Image (cartoon, rainbow, N blue to C red):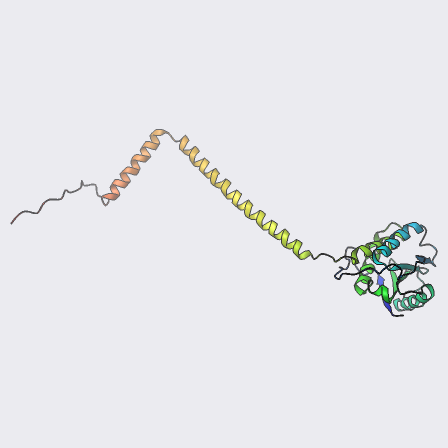
Length: 250
């Protein structure tokens, strides 16, 4: 039986950082994973409301075809992820007889974090690949910090993982490009509208200035303009223009 093993420790990533899903995955066909229970709580103080836990784990199975199983060890009993991995391998063979399960072995470290080991059947591996396992790890840490109950840590983590890994996470680049284009267009429109408004305001001020100017001042201004034009046409001289004369006959 070919298996996948991965492990991680919770406590080193941001709750808002969840790995992207970059590949298309196909759910396992019904029957690959035989129906079993969903959990074992050796600690005895983690799973109180089984319905809450099973809701999220059942959603994970329905979306992926992989049957999830959570095995909770007594708090602080194991801190080595390699040891948890070995335990996951041994427990997989004891608990399941198919290749469609995904086993999570979980141990709280009594210090605000946890350690985990995973073991997955070869068929489950086609869905729960390394990237998908990373998504699950991120959601486990997220809900370890945020979920109000212990059951919801696992329920929400598996449920959200299923939704994320069974679709391709959209790239933010097109969205950023569209937003940038919208901003540029808005700025251009704003500048055009502002310039037109300023031009109309200047024209209105000029007309108001004309209307407020007395007619006598306007007449004087026009007369002054005529005098300037006349002086310019005569080279600036005040003498009257000289009339041309016909040359005398010899």
